[in-house]
Image 1 (cartoon, rainbow, N blue to C red):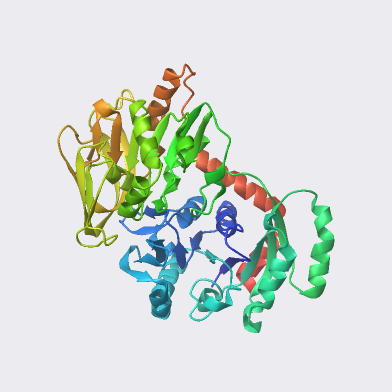
Image 2 (tube, rainbow, N blue to C red):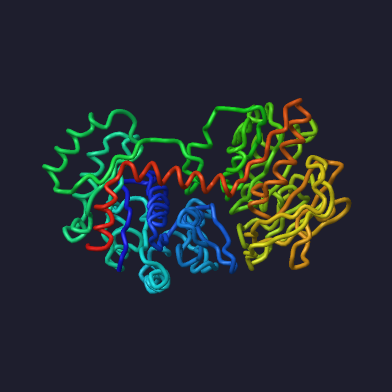
Length: 495
């Protein structure tokens, strides 16, 4: 098998981004390549063309490889629904909700599904670039491991270890990781990469030489730190704490079970626009648009809003005529009530919503997962000329929403269903479509409306798909310049 696996000394060391980089580099060199991660834990997910749910990290990697994402690239997705439990997505569909103990007891039985998914990919592509999770040195999790060294053993993959120098103690973390592995596992490690380096690499070289004297494992690259406009893997991200602000501020509620914050990445790429994740009352100050994001546990997040200062901030923004948009779970929260009599998300039977849209939502056990296209049915007050505008997105939700009173449907979908609701008088709308802001023309109209209100020039609209592709090229160029690519290709084909 022609493959290679990136494992890390810890979470957030750069495994996902370097996997994406190598996918783009190999594709540039004429090699058919696909990413693979057996198990992902994240609240950011995506729906494939055939209606399967998978982690967004592998979507980014597939885009970097210039191929369509398929669920075989991420056969197991864990979506936390509480502090101790997760919804387990297997091959793109709900398997069951499980606590950590039950899941660990089930992992051994999932190996056949993982190998089957991997083999399907391997039959279509020349090279598979695998990504691990966390660290292989988490020895308490070694039994029945399916995502780090256990995965490498299943498909006989050589391993490159990644260390993040930004965290400090990079040589100690790499050395400690290797030494906690079993002898047979150590043999799989063919080299290491130091990521997020700042400064003069010559200063680092003595450490690299001394490390090789202790462990004959070569350094295959030192990657400089460089900010990139590429989606993060999960909610462990620096974006929530960014303080820089532009002429336009998009406020997004930071909820405990917030999902798919990647819905707002595109705003961060617009000139003069910043995204502020709101946790306290004072965070509402100066926002131009308020977005209530998706949620993996809508009722618990709604309860959190009721019991925090966020509720007063939302109503104050509404009184000040700040446009409010709800996405998926955020759309449900805008309504009158959310009921969950079947216990889909929680033991609460029902909870009051914000009452900003005349809708009610009932949770259902069947999850809607669909890529979809539709047309906006009427003009949005804060997006002029939006009537009949074509939009694309994807649905991931377990509730059904019913419109009442003055709320009217927002989008007619290609399958003749109606999506979302709008109350023009209240300057509020909601939709189930994730990725709604990725539609360039709708986003431009929303932002230009704000610009006109503030006396700002209306900028040219960015082409989001083109901009993403340029960032993958930028990432690939950076990594190519700082790794031993020939050695890595030798590891892929000859290990």
